[in-house]
Length: 415
Image 1 (cartoon, rainbow, N blue to C red):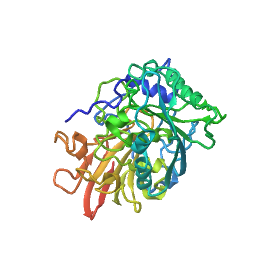
Image 2 (tube, rainbow, N blue to C red):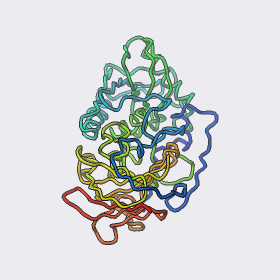
Image 3 (cartoon, one colour):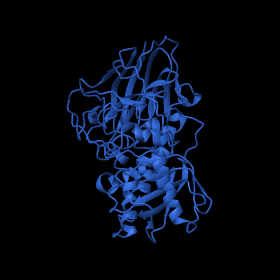
Image 4 (cartoon, one colour):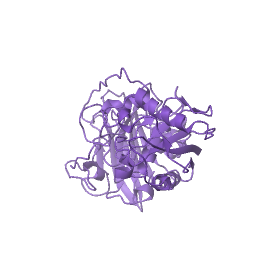
């Protein structure tokens, strides 16, 4: 298994989680019980079999109080729109110790149109990322780039000051009215601004507009991730969690989900969102998920997440905060360069916070070495002998029984 370098270089793991929750002085530790699948095992009582569209709410797990819960539905926190139009505004900054020599258009083209096009395709046209950019200048920050501590351990207070300094530098020049997400892009000369955290707190622009969500880009954008870091960070503003470890365990970026979903490894081999995330964002409807909530045997045909029509997932509810999900990955859409395809099975836990493994992929080929640079990139179950059946060890068995084109048929047995 190839270990990927941590995409949070320069930030202590709990640092970003604190930024997202706006808690800088007292970040709680995560206490998680692991057993076989990596999630808490509970006893699930057998019930009469029920397989139906998930729209009745039984398998549509509700959010919990943890940071960026994987639950689907309203929370106390407001997020940027994930359907319709998300209005962004992009500004460019430089510093007394890092003055820009490149044109703003060069940095603008790093993100646009790549990130909006990615959302258009992944959402099947249901989300438009409309970014207005002031490319007329770099706004000069009042402090040197080194004072903002990005290359040490930035806190939410320091990040908030960075954003407020940028807004103060703009003054009343820009009318930010209607902005859902502010994007701040530093000059490439600002080597101390190393990575790209998202700030979920409210700040006030010079024109009086309240800015509710801000993405602050760093040098990881031009140096490593390209426009996909914009999709990752904008995902947070829409309520999606980090799928790589933030618990200080030292685990690799890919330990929970491999190269699946841009909310994990940004440069992963299969970056399209999980079907669960597309459901959460409103890109898939309730009737595109089959719900299994009880003992018995059912059969389901699933179509790939990179296509719009058909059943997108089978959700096996285990309790009020946990479900096992089966979806299909194919060489389509954002996964067009996938090195492996088939039925992807993972556990969703709405009680695990961002960075604590709220989604964990089950590997059909453990110890294979994987493909595309990671062990879990070939985790897919298929009709190939030895890769047909997933067994949870606590009463759920999912077996691949058919393949037609890119559509897979599976049987689900629950004890």
